[in-house]
Image (cartoon, rainbow, N blue to C red; front, side):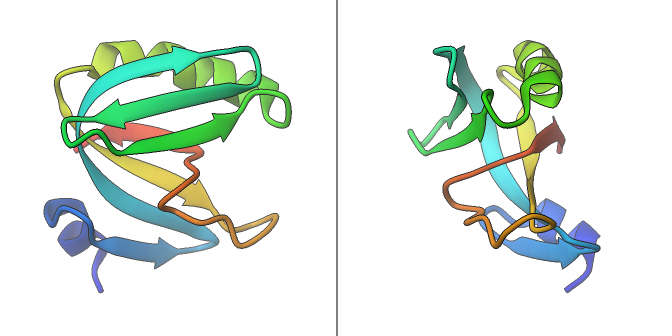
Length: 96
């Protein structure tokens, strides 16, 4: 599957170079509790990112999320350190 195809189709997943990209929908909420950054889309689906494990990148992603609220986004899930479930975890986010 082409990355562009995954980016244009809600719920589609593309695997590239140790990362999985998923179209997440419209970002509606972001919160952090000191352990996790949690994002929520318009359907109520959530994804998590560990602050404890990835402090610097989690803080950057957390702040970036606020500029993306109300916009369609794609999320990345790293597969470099383990087979992280892309329907539970995320490691980066960008506008669709």
